[in-house]
Length: 219
Image 1 (cartoon, one colour):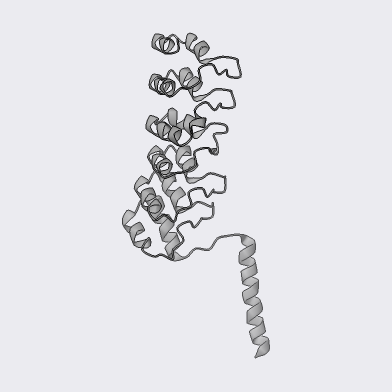
Image 2: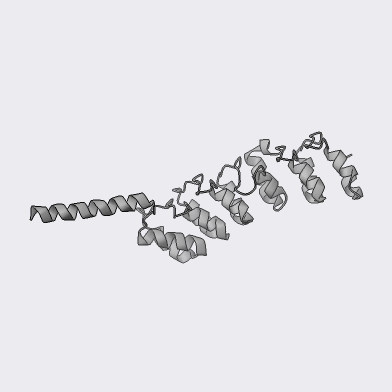
């Protein structure tokens, strides 16, 4: 009888060792449902799950994606708000490539979710996987001016940061001839004297353009 018990114990321990060595996370049914509801935007299901105070809202899947990241990935801004309203969400957790929820939102052009995250205090001095040297502010100024303004309120130092080519948000906007973005950047004091890696300033780039309005803005 003792030998049989010992055999069972060894089998169980071997199974646990195998599981640990694979590194594959194990999830409860509720955790799986939480991740699915967050990714698909099933708000009704999510609200039911959130009633369970024992549920780990920061659970990470095989790619270390949290429910908040999954909501950010697919643009579920209402779900993101519901998760954040619990005050149990760790916004700065990173997935397997080092992206936070905000980085996931920006990298997938989910600007509504990004607005929610920035408003709730997400760190904006981050990097986004696949966009080496491109700041969240640069991404926002080119796609969502409202988000860009929110980022500046959180961290004004991001205004004049330069990308690997030495271009600031202002220089990048001038090259794109994005008048609304340029006007916004100038209104908040973007530095016009910065030079990129080619030694060109904002005015130098404006002179290369045939856009007269652009040139007038930089005089």
